[in-house]
Image (cartoon, rainbow, N blue to C red):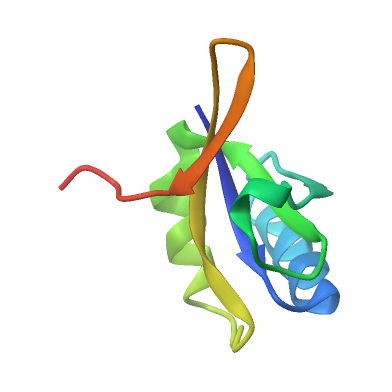
Length: 88
């Protein structure tokens, strides 16, 4: 599963991507899917297996424009983007 970190600011998206790379997390930027209905048009995308680490790294920055984490899945040939609620 793919996780998207959605921001309202392009500069925050790019800063977060750079911070993830510094901590060894494989991530990329991608256009924010219209299904998320929010954001600056640029989100940070990474695999759900590194979510715990990515969330901890997010807390090390001051990202006032952070909207939330979303999961992106492909269901029946369509993209589904919904808020991500990690298992407890």
